[in-house]
Amino acid sequence: MEAASTGKPKIYAAGFREEWKEKFPRLSNDKSNGKKCTICNIGIVGGLSHIQRHASRECHIKKLQIAKNTPKINTFLESTRFVNNDLAKKLEIILCFFVAEHNLPFTILDHLNNIIKDGIANNKKVFN
Image (tube, rainbow, N blue to C red; front, side, top):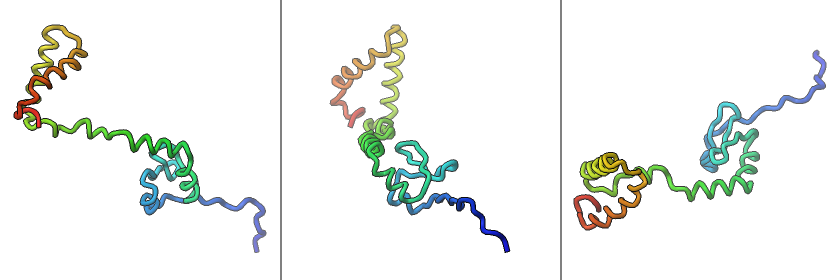
């Protein structure tokens, strides 16, 4: 018979479970730590109780609210505002040539944008 070991018991790390993502959608599988909070960008070592404790912390809740209020990048890239994309591209190219030809600063386009909107707002070929 072997003698009983007097060392500390072996600690088993809790692995990542896919069912946790249902309750914590911002949780992802991390190869180094096992679990990662994508909002806080930190690894979570431990089991479900550690995840729940992290989710209830004030810093996580603040970052979660900020993430909810931040618009997605796709909203800026949508081209649904223009009915005729080819006409909009042509207008954009003409404006860029105008700015480059006259050696104007690109910041002038911010002001020119409002003038163009007012000038062709009623034109249904370009805008909705």
